[in-house]
Length: 279
Image 1 (cartoon, rainbow, N blue to C red):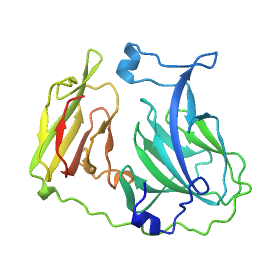
Image 2: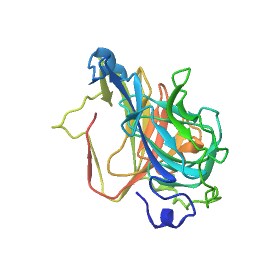
Image 3: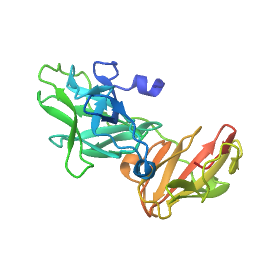
């Protein structure tokens, strides 16, 4: 979804030509080619990990690039897999957006971590005309090629990497009128928030409309990194373990990955009525 600022930027924006959505999933296929979902204790604890990657519903897709500067809007749509997305030749690319919109300026990188449901947008230069470039996940310790890109016949783009993208209104900590702690833990194979399991009939926290709050999200003996998602609003990350957030997180977010033993502080404004259930 774009706004007036995005539409007026001189960046690739022709859907399917130089502006490509990439919905990445990992699925489990049987030897007969059937897709299956295995629900057992390991998947309840660690999440469901697939043996085959898919992009936009296709296994081993090939993208024939049309333009030398291409914009990828990437969604990690997997159940539990945290991905380290890069290209097979480790070329640089430029991140231009987080979950909630544009960053203030492009961030040069050659690898970005994306947890389930997180979104990023990147610009990548394909002017070298390679016919065997791969989008690759390096998180497994080795690497898995997700999608092949053939840019041999790509036409020269009319765009360049911009120096600026937008202006973000950063929320000041002193605006917060409420602080909350959200502790993630795992007991008997069940994820808990503040030591409570999910119940549809129980409301654990209430927030006031138009209020500003700081939440400290941490893990307590959780056996894995876990994405934390807040519905109905976007937030900004204030700190990770008391230090500045990662450069790739400097923008509007609605999901943050919290690793074992980490403490992440986020700040947000609530502009609509909300009730919070532990899950």
